[in-house]
Amino acid sequence: MTALLTASALRKSFGPTEALVSASFAIDAGEVVAVMGPSGSGKSTLLHCLAGIVRPDEGQVRYQGRDIAELSDSERTALRRDEFGFVFQFGQLVPELSCLENVALPLRLAGLRRRQAEATAREVMARVDVAELAPKRPGEVSGGQGQRVAIARALVTRPKVIFADEPTGALDSLNGERIMQLLVGAAKESDAAVVLVTHEARVAAYSDREVVVRDGRTREPVVAA
Ligand SMILES: Nc1ncnc2c1ncn2[C@@H]1O[C@H](COP(=O)(O)OP(=O)(O)OP(=O)(O)O)[C@@H](O)[C@H]1O
Ligand SMILES: [Mg+2]
Image (tube, rainbow, N blue to C red; front, side, top):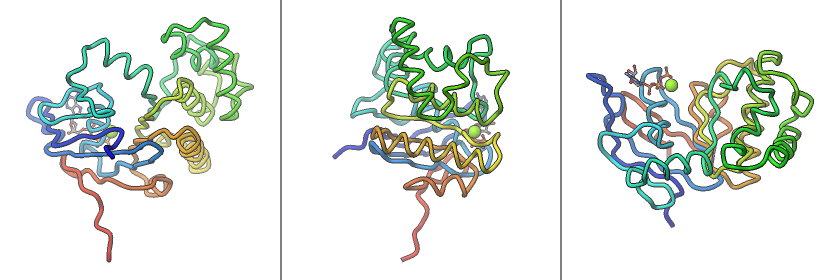
């Protein structure tokens, strides 16, 4: 069986900086993989390559067996919109929209009518316990609440892969645990994969497996026999 999303021998430089030297990765449906490593080691760059946001200089990323570099720009945009969900450290909600409109946005971009998009958005918001925040703007909610709204937005299209870059980085430990339970729960429930970038061992403990990035190189931790 081939994995849902794989990367092999990725190399990516930004000017003189070698962000990735030799990075490989594979994740299956329903799997939660933590990407760990020191600051500047290349974790976010790996995530961006996997998500088709950054194009590697060398190496391949395959989604469902297809090399994403061979897709057209519009196919890649559609892939990110329809199959992938994103959660970042600071929610990155649109400040001018209500929380409900933020969660509904990916469905609106996919062409759904407002009523239908917002009905689905309300269901997902209820699932992550932020239904009552629907009319509020992101500036009017707490960090933990905003992050739950961001998770609702990431889940609303029922993505096959959720990319989370330090999703708990700005939260206290209680809210962090809550976010991880939601992410892992959503993944298991809908058989989605989660690529989880984190510094924190406590957060990585929620994953099925860890991949360590150091100086642009990936390795799986050695398990003592
Ligand atoms: N757009 C960019 N332009 C120039 N350099 C970049 C860019 N993105 C990343 N880099 C550099 O590439 C290296 C890897 O960066 P990356 O963001 O992948 O690290 P990281 O492991 O995610 O770090 P952190 O834990 O601090 O988020 C760093 O040296 C960084 O400065
Ligand atoms: Mg990073």
